[in-house]
Length: 125
Image 1 (cartoon, one colour):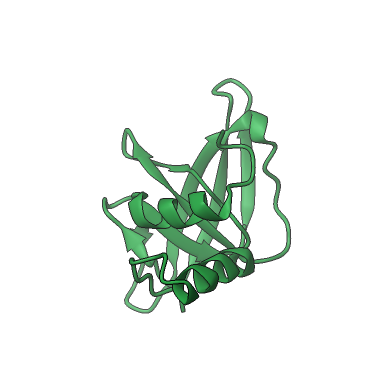
Image 2 (tube, rainbow, N blue to C red):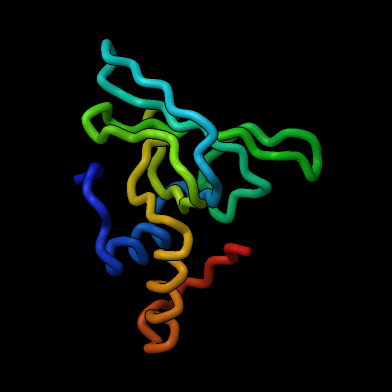
């Protein structure tokens, strides 16, 4: 499910097939009990992958504003660290799939590349 951590295989597959990949820290989380969802807000320097226009891009070189939805039951809360948010578009909104810490994804990605198991290149710098 969307609330549990993704395996390394799921991380790599999601990075290749998701509608978006965005690398950033969590700025805030708003919970909506009526809709049974939480909205994670992030501001990123760039979006490595976006197949649909989900995120508002500011002035050239400015941050990308992103709101990413997730089920309320996942219990998302702001915390330290950089995350790699990946997910899908539903009704024009970004919905979270896998969201590992960036370092966790980097290790899985490097291991897969070393073993030639991952064909997709993803510029994450």
